[in-house]
Image (cartoon, rainbow, N blue to C red):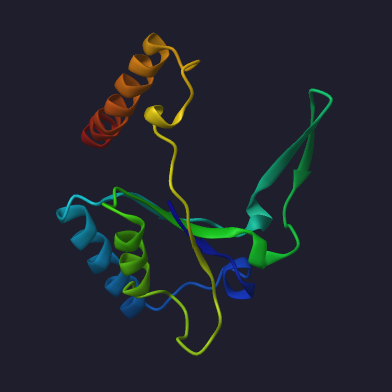
Length: 147
């Protein structure tokens, strides 16, 4: 998973230019065509969000906006990269919606797979998880087709 960190522009709801959005869409389309980009979205400002903090089994709701924009996520991509280096290469060559002279941060983290869990992750749970992962794209496609 590749996460683009928020900044004052994303928290202010400032949209990238049409040219930058077109370049991003083109790069995303290339990733989909290559079979490596599985999902990607931009996230709205935290002013439109909420957080739930759990303590002693009880949730406490906090409405946005939240402080420390640099600690929040502005967008994400989920990729099936062959290696961490492949993901780094993708990140280094992406047309970000930022002025190249400004500082921003992108974080890359592997997702867990069933094989990463201990033997306690019983075979029947592992199978159910694998079937669910197969169903998600199919279900999304069906919703899109019905719309």
